[in-house]
Length: 199
Image (cartoon, rainbow, N blue to C red):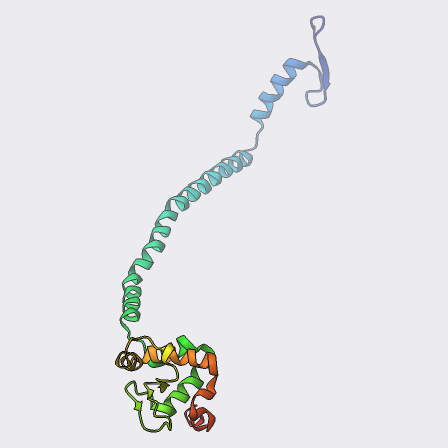
């Protein structure tokens, strides 16, 4: 075999001889292409197909996701009328006397309620004008002494103050002022422990 001067040659065991490097590379690629097993080609095709299938599945998931989110966003709208009804009912619900005791007395609400129940039966218009030796009046749900707590009660005249004390929430609010300044001993039924039957 004749080679031009400067031609790179190498010994190739596969072709059992010395070949030009350029020819060897071209010939090797050709031979490799001819001798590629069928199973290998099928494996490569299967791998590519599997990869493309996975990409399609991911694309479908991404497109489907906004629909799921939109459904999740629509769910609260179906319950919104119920929530509005609940809020409306809460707003329309008239507060009870227990609500006012809780509002003003907090943790001591049960004791305050028991004392007032014993004093007045929780009647807003309850008025004691004869039991006090000094002639003072006890008025309303918590039997607030009109004369003793005159300055704590809004109103310019006696009638104004009496009317003010016949409103349960306002009466309980004044009772809290009395409790803060004198404690429970301001009420006779606390001192004689008659209130305990209402706990």
